[in-house]
Image (cartoon, rainbow, N blue to C red; front, side, top):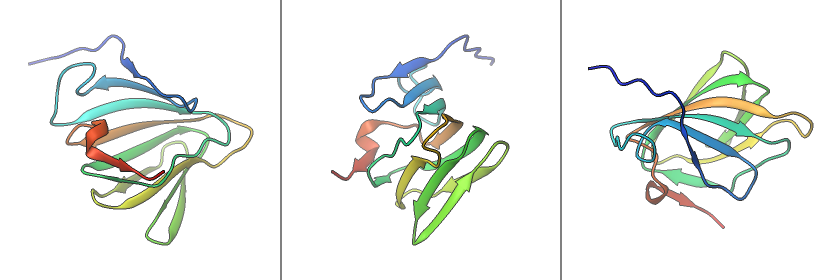
Length: 119
């Protein structure tokens, strides 16, 4: 079977980050995995979260900062990082001046109810 996606669906957000889901619950009604193209504005930062899925991020442009388990790594163009389910993690754009662009692959698919966000 082949399934071509010509354009994704945007997850609504209020913090300026764009989540353009190509495969997943919102765009293709798939639950096994999700694949989304992400755009984080300069100085963007999410609250800490714990997800019930594994997430692989793939850098495209800029630097994505990932903080977990007392470590901080920055993912640049062509680099990847695996964040295992159950990990308390904070994602942020490492730059205050430029946008960060990356892809996110979640297994099983991203769903808001599978993510516990701290206030």
